[in-house]
Length: 143
Length: 435
Image (cartoon, rainbow over all chains, first blue to last red; front, top):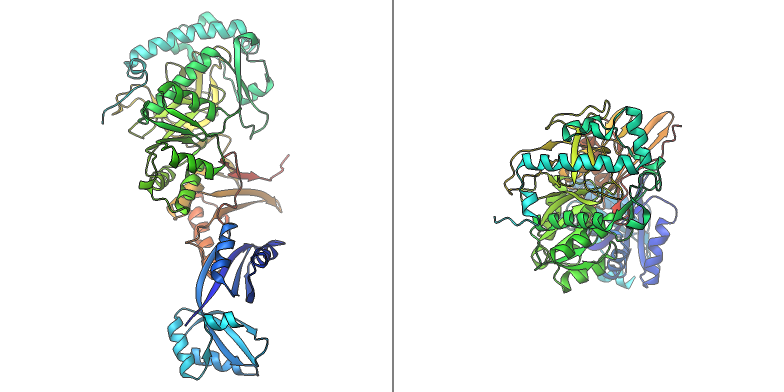
């Protein structure tokens, strides 16, 4: 059920991110979502793309440190309080969220939240049981 | 294990006979230098030493030292002892610590140097049945020329690859079944990493032995290379000033390098006082070239810190052994008043499960030394969580603090992002401008 997130290690210096997005663009890879965690000297780029296999391959060829991790994607209504409701459920199920980021769909009246948790299955069943709809790899490709 | 020697008579000569041979050669060499090298004659005259005062190796301590500074002062011809017509080659140092050193060779000098390298190859198990891949740099650097010549003398099929172009190295290695690899240890580790990335297992690699030198490396690094390449890795030592690689070499025992004593007379001295230390004590290694014709250095201070040992070796060689140098008097960094050797950093990295791909950057801010260590992280070590990467950096910094007594800032970086020049990793960048 989980979706794949591409994680890229980049130095924290001018031009480091554009170098990555440039490689992806040249290989016709579409970004669905992007988030960056940065420190003083490095950054970790987290990407949801339409074709993570190709993206992983082309970035590895250029010498990037890459890790593909499973993350939980959940669809939530685009209105105040909806994210809080989803996080509440995880909190009650004692599931710790390492990090999260959100993106909007172009057509639907929905937001998508990407969650990095220790136990994907537990998070997925807690959210599903509470009536949330999870997004799949197939959904990502259709976006 | 059956032992093979390239020049058995010399390599297994009783110690008293070696000393006698050295004494005879020394007397002649001092005379040759005094007569032909004005620079050294002046040093001897200043010290009040005449060639006839040197009757054997017991008088060696009476001679003045030569240092790298003398070589720079005398550049380029000041220490030459033969007319240029008799010289056939020059080799030169990498010049990383200042002005290049240029050394001259007669044909006989080259022959004897190649013999030394041949001894090293045979001690590593080499014979005319082997395919020897020389991936040291060719050109001015002595690594390529020395091992190339040694490999010819042994009768190996020699692959003169020079350094770099790793894909081509791997192609030749696998297509032509190279059994012996000669290069710097950091390049051997790099070739190993690349082979691993390309899906090769140690048993798929035809190599059986490696002869690695020209830069410091640790036992842990040796084990890593041996494991990845499925070989036995032997150390070789030398310096352009005395000839090049092959001044000393490791045997099957892999516990120190036999010095080719028939050509090189070794001493250990206290680097501060110049006093000669007894066997077994740690100090600066000093060499006297006994046979060099064109560029015969007497009592040349190598600045390598090491120990000599005459303990009986299981390989049957009687040649004295030198331990792997523990550092160089000039590689030693003094950071916030503490002595730091790059080899200590390397030991920590290997203990903590990292490849020894690192770079030390020292600078000064607000009158205090800054001490940063960049370390390459492997794809297996990388995680998507910032907190994990920061925790790894902190753990490494703590381990280094335990080893060194001072706290570095550790930065993890992407693999292969630390610059390598001619196969030699650039280990230290000291930006401090104190003068």
